[in-house]
Length: 99
Image (tube, rainbow, N blue to C red; front, side, top):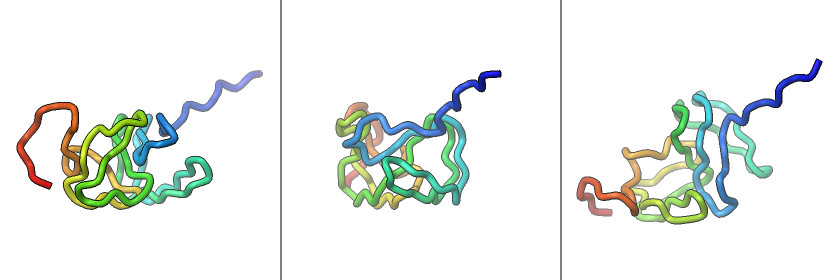
């Protein structure tokens, strides 16, 4: 009997990215390995949300799809949830924030 292929739990969309995307909910404390890099999740990550693969300093670019999608409004540590609480979009209008 053939087993169905395992669905990935997260995606790295481009090797230049400093965030990955959870395909299914991920739990705080989980160890993730991406391209021989180990990341320990600092928060629960909902499906469809991003988490940092390495330190992203306040004011630094957040890169997804190999492109800048926003700026970090505060430091985002490796394994932390990366979302509207710590990123301002470079593509969509949003609340005015200064970096």
